[in-house]
View (cartoon, rainbow, N blue to C red):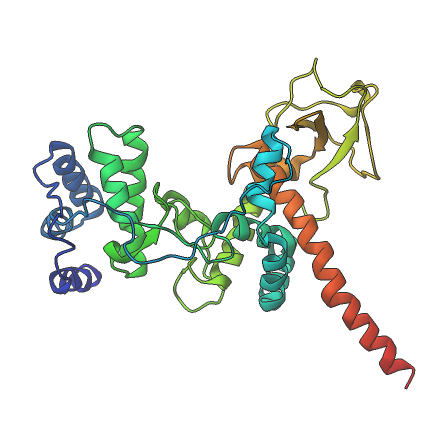
Length: 347
């Protein structure tokens, strides 16, 4: 019945464009269709209809709200690799919009914290960096992008993208959505949380219990990010990282990055700049700035963030944005509640 509904919707759906590409003559596509039929019982007729109408240009034609990147001012700005990376991910109203997102979805974020142990500010920061709080959920039609990446001769990582295409179609079948209408990133990431299709079944959750998983909507996206962190080892009430002091302006001699861990007692002359209640092994995370290296301890929860994107800089941007959002949110909302509570007690 599910396949019949999708097949009927496909027949009623108009031709994508005059420049649609027919992939059904491609031998790899035929092999893929046969695999989907044999392994997952998909109707070949349905799949041939899909692959006959692949958009030549999968970019979404209508206007999408993009993150506005402020140009460099006339005043000189530092040009170290972290200086540049942090400008992209920590400026342009990221903190302010994050505070608004936390305020709007406070109950859902608190529910996620109770269930998964992931603080609201980290969930919010992920959604901010991945989709600009939902304002940029994707500039490409996912089915068409994944088809090009899977079967074009010049495409790299073809097996990886064929697996993503497989899981994307399976997700569309489970959730009963039209494959050619879903928008995402050029590589196939979907929704506010920008999950790859292969992560959808095991990590995305129906957090509002409506029988559907829609990470293009805030409630399911929040629950899914929290579940992603929890499944990758997030520990409640453990720190993420702390900036440390060291001798000199540039750090050399020890390997840095999330792949290397050290006992703190074997790191002489490196010590936290503030209280760091953590007794496990730590990573050394180096942020290269124009005139010096900023060095941090990374805890296990820092490593968890890198499972979302395997980059020290990405994980540090999430951590720093989360701290900024929490500080601003506390100042704007929690202090206000405290003042109101105090005022009510003296009446």
